[in-house]
Length: 150
Image 1: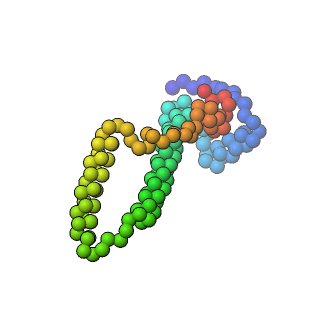
Image 2 (image 1 turned 120 degrees about the vertical axis):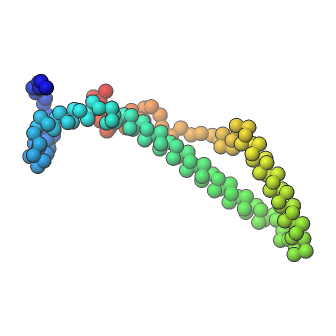
């Protein structure tokens, strides 16, 4: 394999770190530079792609968290209202109340199935806030890789 000589310039700080790394690891300067460039050009190390995926996962987690918070609050309100408006059932009426509850619960389940099957879900009615945009993503990429990353 043919090898070519290059003459890059490094800042004093980076040059000291580079030399120290080569000395402590026993690696040659050429091997360190070659490995760094291989990683830079290799798609596995595409920082922008990784950041985009992390951003998407972050938005998904934020949506799930928001939805879970909303469901928790809705459940809390429901339970408080249920306790406030549901009288204690006398022992002699419990059998009829249980039968009525089973029937109403079955109606509820059927309604949920129909509603979910319609394609219009409860959370689709809620406003969706934008968690990040392209400018925010580009800023994160620039901060991580520097302004000359392409």
